[in-house]
Length: 267
Image (cartoon, rainbow, N blue to C red; front, side, top):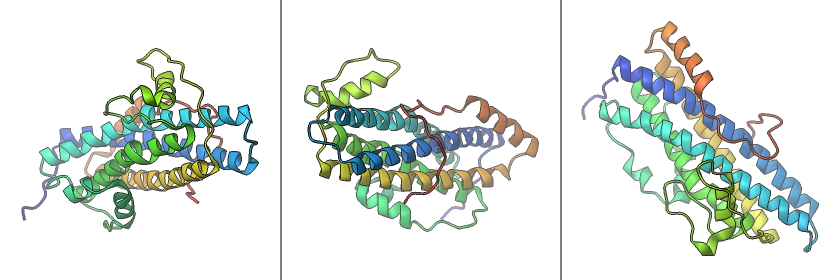
């Protein structure tokens, strides 16, 4: 097996910038997901009456906020991570995308990513890119599976998924929520979201719990990768790129009730 190469200085700067911005993006979405999980827990604990219109509105708002997190937030982070992995593959810094992981069903991939054994103290560029690849797989799984399923538990219908055809007319509830928050589309008033049954709220909570856990893992992977890759660049250049990322990182769209604290716990 051929030894992995190192990326060029120019490519390293691009990767570092993208990874730094991805770290900020994914961390912001993690904090929002934690807040949404707390809000849904409070909703469930309140046990609203079956005819409580305010409860319907709260579930609709939660569904809209979850869409903001993955459709208007994590998707940008996924693109940044994807560009890092693409450069690594083209530069032979990693052999290829992990096909076994890429083809796994989502629930199996969730367990595989949590159980994945990567060097605890990464030192090489190959180690760093393996972390970025794992983070990319985690983020894509969140925006294509866990978070859309969470929205469907909250408001019914078929939730939008980045890069896939928009839900059909039979999924007006979730589609309306997505369009209402998309900056490139006219706001479309959705039909009134149906009340999620208690079992659906429980499922939504479980999807959010899993999303919190895997998002936290993605943040750790990206942070490790940035730390390692920074060692291969000039310290002054790293400082410049850090400042650039601080200024230009896209953090997504704020949810209806902004996060009050950054709690890394996934319990």
